[in-house]
Image 1 (spheres, rainbow, N blue to C red):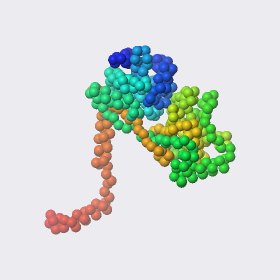
Image 2: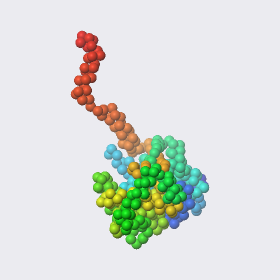
Image 3: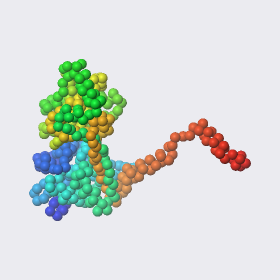
Image 4: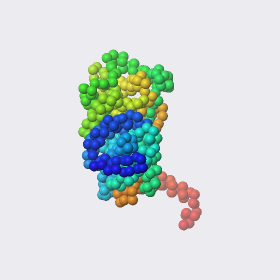
Length: 405
């Protein structure tokens, strides 16, 4: 099904067919390649494959902006019906959010040079779109024209609107050479980077660093990554990715698609013919982005993850990348290596509907009330000794007045 929302010179068409989405690959990629604000997560492969895997039970709302016959904007959304406090709530969300995936830098693909007018046309189409109670757009680039446009248009439409930070993301600016990067480190860290690599190579002369580039055997590489990831986090008693069939199947598909477009960097460290550590990165424009990782805890004494990360930094510099972006997730090693932080943001807008009221009650009002309640009543209990001490102190201070009472 396709409907049109006119907006002066720009016409926005609302697509509800998954088949139409699947057929947009070439046009989508052309627009995406030249867009000023774009990411691997807004590319056709990531969006299309996510919808194919996770779209079941959700209603596609793909907004296409045209100026005449020219495609000037793409905004992939869906409506999801959930129950909160027993009440149905219809949320309008980005394709890519939901399920068990965690992408960053979502948003529309906008024609370069037309960002402002296309963003506003898409934003107006979103606010006029039927069938939703809550607009829940998260993980947006704060510098994308659409981010400011959707907030402004939502407020003009008198929708209750909230904005804020989705994630704080660490990144590392890369110098022009490996030696320059080493020189930028504190001497203790520089010594550690060199010594752990030297120790591993000395004890395992056959150790090998490589980047997986064979499409025919990539599935085996993804399976090994999933195994190492689960083994590493299970050993520490923590939850992990690669825990659902959908997640595993999705990443098999999206990694293959990214490899075909030279957007995948699957870094590997091999010892004795066996891969003991892997990092799954995306390559996009002048940056590499960390998606997942894993290592064999049986080799933890050799610090295989840290050794591999050193090789990755050296390789990324050698390829001419300017930034190594850690994406979301808080880990100490990210903060230790980071040279800066960036943010993604959210915009939530609520219509005057019962579902929106329930959403606000469940997501905002009740959690705030719970925090206030805990702060007021969950104070550390007073011990018997402290009660006696406090009573004696009051007796001492109040003296005769207390006795005569």
